[in-house]
Length: 556
Image 1 (cartoon, one colour):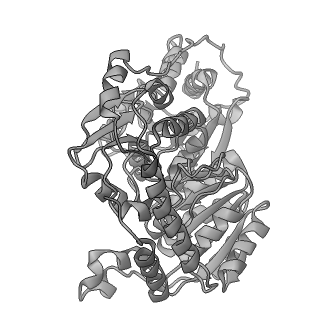
Image 2 (cartoon, rainbow, N blue to C red):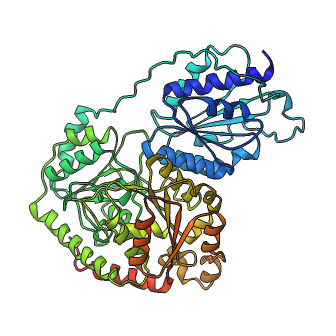
C-alpha cells in the first residue's frame, strides 16, 4: 500500500474507533500535514465536522460543543504553531473538567531535529493540563489495535476526571491519496461502563452529628445535573437550609420556584450570617462576598463534595472532603433541621436585596445589572445563554435574581479568562440552537476571529460596551493614580463596521428595554450583534447604591 493510502487507512481506523465509542463532533482547521485526519473525519458518516481557520478559535468552539452535553469533541490541526494555539482552550478545559480529544498532526521522526519546516517538539506540549498524552507511531499496515485504543482514549477524556487527552500523530508524505479510498474494515471496540460514585455508608452516618443547627448549602459555578439539583432542593427542605447558588449552577433558573434558593445570595452573604455547618458543591463561588462569608466561619463544619478527586477549597477551610455523586450523597444524608426562624431570617435579607436590585435596575439608562436582569427574565424556556467573564458574570450574579423559568446558563469559569468567550458561545449554539452571548467590549475584542463563524450560526451577541475594564472600578486598583492608564483599556474599534465586514446584522440600543427587545427579536435567526454603550461612572454608582441598600440588617 502506498504511503498516502496507508496514512488515510490509519486515520480512518483511528477516527472510526473514536466514533464507535461515541464521538460525534469534530472541529478541524485547514492544513497540509493533517490531511489524512481531516479527510477521514469529513468522510465518516457518523461525524459532523466544522472547519475553522483560526486554531485558537477552533479550540474554544470545541470547548463550547463539549460544554453542551459534557461529551468529548475532537480537534484536528496541522503541525507546528497551529496546535500551540489550542493552549488557552486546553487549560480552560482542564480546569473546568470539559472532555476534549486533541488530534495533532506531526512530522515523522526523520524530519525532527534537522531544521525541517513547520516542525517542533510536540510531545507533551500541554504538560499537566491533559489527562493523558500518547505519541503514536507513524502509520503502518498493522491497524488491528488502533480502534480499540481509540475507544479507550475516548473514555479517558470522560472518566474518572473529565478533561483533554492529546494524541500526537506523525504522518509521512504523500498525504493525499489518489483515486477512490474505500473505508477499511470496521473493527469492534470495547463497551466501557462508568458508574456513579456512591458515598460510604459509615461516612454518611458520621455526618449526622455535623449537620446540626443552622446550616447552608453553597453551590458554585459548575453546572449541576437535574438529579443533583433535585436532591439538593430535597435536602434543603429536610434540613431547613437555605441554598446560596451561583447563577451557573442552574439552581436559580430552574423549576420549581422555591424561596429556599436565594435570589441574591451574594447580597445575603455580605451580611455574613453565622451558620453552624455548610455543604459545598460545584466549585468555588464566583463572587468574593460568598467566599468571605465562608471564611468568616472557619472552624464550623464545612463539607466539600465533588464527584471526582478534585476539590474546590482555595481557602483550605473545609473540615471534610468527600468524593461522591452529589445526588446520591444528598439522598443519603440525615441530619437535624435548623430552627424555623433561621431560613426566615435569611429570606428577609433576600427579599430586601430583591427590592434593592429592582430599584437599582428601574431606570432605563443602560446598566449591566438592569440589562442582565431583564434579559434573563425575558428569554424563552430552556434558552441557552453564555455569560462572559469579569463584570458580565458578576452583574448577573448580583442583579439577575431567581426565576422559575428554566434556562441553560454557561460560562468559562475554569480559569475565568476573557479569551475565546465568543468562540465558546458559537460552539454552544452549534450544539443547542439559538443562543445568546453577553460579552463586554474587551472579551469581544479578544475573539474577533470568531465573527467569521457567526453568519452561519444561530448566535446573538449582546455587547456591553463600557469602554474597557469596568470590573476594575470595583477593585482596589481603582484607587491607584495609574488606574486609567494601566487598567481601563478602552479600545478604538467600531462594532458596526465589524458587523458589516463579517456580514452580520447590527443594532445599536440606547436603553435597557431596547437592547433586550433587539436580542429577543434576533434570537431565532442569530447572526446579530446588539451594541449598548454604557457609562462606567453611572454603572458603578448604581451598583454601589444596590450594595448599600440591600444590607438592611445582619444575621448573628
